[in-house]
Length: 639
Image (cartoon, rainbow, N blue to C red; front, side, top):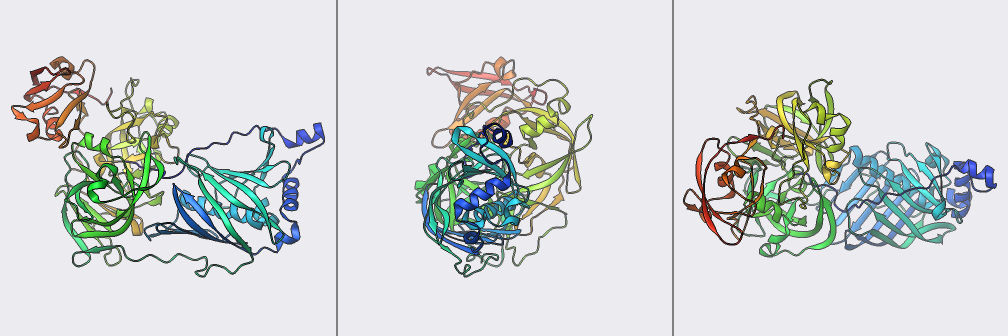
């Protein structure tokens, strides 16, 4: 399950651009080159002499991020180094030293950034060095800069900067004062806008005392209001190097591992029994596609937890509200995580799909603490301390990089009639299917034509879940092969995403590799070394069965998830022919009352070709009937 983008909202800036050179010739006014704009900016900001004297800047202020108030302290140096410490209920540290960047999260975990995460932090440091006294430093600001034009409607002038190893951004200036108004960059799919307000003079230099950031899926702006700005202050006490790791936040009952932890795989997901703050065991889904460990908001009361903050996240198809909580203890087998800041969101939709009570998702915050070994045949997990335990196993190493907490791997896809296609795939053990390809990737490589033998019909969305954050809009397809870490898995049924919203509409990755592929291996995830180990198991070479359906979609409800409601009937399907209707509730299966079986049992019964069953049905309006069915299945692969 791909969960992406906590706390950033889309805010695209639309420029009404006209060449400044043409305006200057026609009206005899306005700067026509980058140098002219910079010259006016330098003059407005305090002049060459005052700006060139700025070597370091020390900032202190109050911040609000994702609805949580805190205090911010930052340091900038003229060589582009930056350190920003934010204190709320916890402490976070972001540090860049030239081309090296680190992020110490709220739980004290330090991650060396790479890929797009690193490029974005380099850009933040570059931008702030310009805003706080760097306008006069030629080398810093003129390389790669170009004039875009004027935003006449708002009285602005716009320059695009391209920081070395960073992300291009558009910086707009007030055409009257020539002080910066806002900067817009797009490190991922959604633009991030930083607004600069409340300019004041400090030591002869103009600096903004208010910064407002809008980006990603967040519901509210993140703001920083400065209380104090000191020029040429001493550097931070810890310097601009790697932040110090927080205290160790996990332990084992004994030794340096916890093995033999059982998991439930009846819904093609790794469901692990966990205890939160001493609660009774409840299912958590192991999810490499989740950038945080997440608590189900409907279970907060029984865990004795309170939420704080407010933002939103993007799932496979939609966005959903997201907040935070503090978890004193999360026990998984003989391992325990302590003092965690976790995410909070509504997972009741997943509970209805799986027919199981869910405490949450075990995401990046959990996976990054251990070496995690998944053995599908035995349905057990093993957790190791990465500091004392080298990556176990005898399989092949598959390197990955972490971007926004997601493991990205390089892979290759083969389809008939085209050369092999390189793909940037996210490892997503929270996705039940084999391979899901994003809609931009599908379109770019004509996969609706090449990965299907006939034109696609109406796209698929799970009935009853259209508004859920995990909803997906797709058509079925098939690829000749996917190659991953030297292993080639052949003739793979896949999902071709066609939706225009949510994570699978992203241009930042090609798709996800889910359980349909991963379950063919013993998989070992070592986030500390950025590597996955794959050991083929007995299922590795087994041909993929065609995807088939009886034609009825069920969701569960009720306190024990034993109210099994038909939420969709496929047209011209065996389910329709048998007389099932949308809205029917299955109250018995072969004489067993609904309280005696689970949703997975019902689905299994109705997916066994040729089997015969008697369904007790309660109709909308209260009528009770019995329907005898002989299960026959129709193909989904070309539907």
